[in-house]
Amino acid sequence: MELGWTAGELQVSEGGLRDQASWCEALATRLATNSAPAGAGSSPLASSAAVNISHAQVVAAGMRCAIRMQTTAAKLAAASDGYGSTEASSAAQLRELWPATVC
Image 1: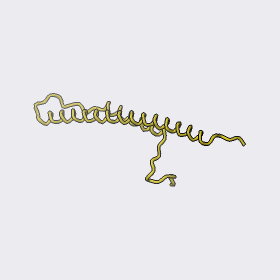
Image 2: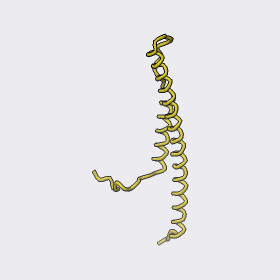
Image 3: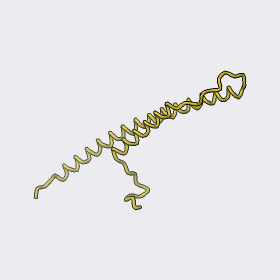
Image 4: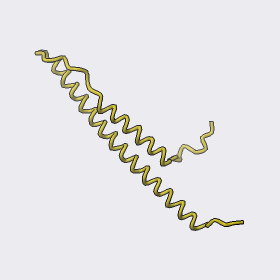
């Protein structure tokens, strides 16, 4: 299948960036709402305490990942806005260089 571009090229569009931002936001939401399994409750066993500590660490790691994904989503949304603005400005500059002619 011919893609029309080489591996060294980056294909970007305003909509594509916005889609990626939405995808990252959705993943961040899923991560934020995930939780570790319920602990074993209070138990004098050291292994139970270790499991509860591990669960807390899993929750904390999930929250850190969710925050990173939300930050990435915000950056992608901002990039989309900037990309669209640059495209509109570039198109306007090109139109000024070659005004429309009537034949």
